[in-house]
Amino acid sequence: MNIMDFKIISKNNNARAAELEINGKRIKTPAFMTIGTYGAVKTLDVDDLKNCNVEIILSNAFHLMLRPGTNLIEKYGGLHKFMGWDGLILTDSGGYQVFSLGKDVKINKIGAEFRSPFNGDKVLMTPEISIDVQTKINTDIMMIFDECIKYPSDLKETERSMELSLDWALRSKKANTQNKALFGIVQGGMYPNLRERSRNELIKMDFDGYALGGLSVGEPTELMYEIIVENGPKLPPHKPRYVMGIGKPLDIAYAVREGIDMFDCVIPTRNARNGQLFTTTGIKRIRNAKYATDSSPIDEKCNCYTCQNYSISYIRHLDRCNEVLAARLMTIHNVYFYQNLMSLLRDAIINSSLDDLIKQLENNYSEVKND
Image (cartoon, rainbow, N blue to C red):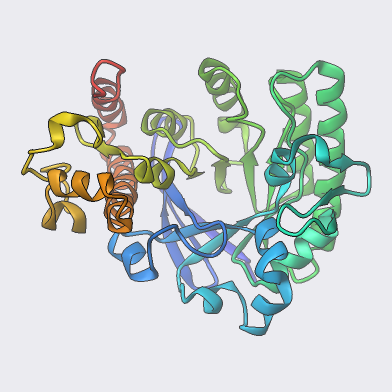
């Protein structure tokens, strides 16, 4: 019995439009996973998500383990029932979150030791614990536990980290006794030879999907592109490919062109709460004075709930008054925009017009176009 079915529908050079089915739930790829770290997308409920055409969200095993705790979620029958979401859930293992704790983490071959950022308790995270948490909260797609290191890091340190992540990858796979969908994560920093070694060893381990990790950690955009171009098309063609943590529209489009299928990032939701809105003509910053009396919607071409019902001047007013409704309405718009972007990318692949769509995005998202 296959854990997961991944079927490519159409190709445009390296780019692929596909369908991913798991646990009776099907999504279309390329797909963008909206971030719901604690089992919720900030300011939105599940009806909002469905109305924005969200099919898959990303939650975080590390944070959910710390609160509300694995046992509580398990008592509810898993995260889906706990949060009332019947779509797909992918859980990040916590490697990046451990990295973000900085110097307070002690890394060794066993795992990562740190103090909880919530109550100061001592915590040990290992590949086995991470997989156990993800299994008990009954996620659909699990990620291996890996180590993420800062940019820049020298060759020796990066190689040590990459080798440790490979060891943790194998331990994560062995710990997956329930045979749930599990993705490997390619590490190796900005060193092509280390990326190649990591990629090849993970392919030998035969994971259900593969991610490129260790990006969006401060490296130049051009270097990030090089890693994606070099590694994306070389990941197994019959399995989903995922780039972790990138979320600018152009970055997503360029990665799709190289055969990447899945994405996640906090940009749509975090930027919405800060008044930065993505539109078909570029980025609009709602706190600019020119929107104070603008009676038009955020984007006249957008069919989201916000644009169909409210003017940008009203939302700007709410934002200036620190009304939580402003954050909700702007988040709805950005989440809808990203789901619509992925739909446009899928259609462009099927219609062999991806290059044209990328040119349009380049025109709309150049620095000059953003207000």
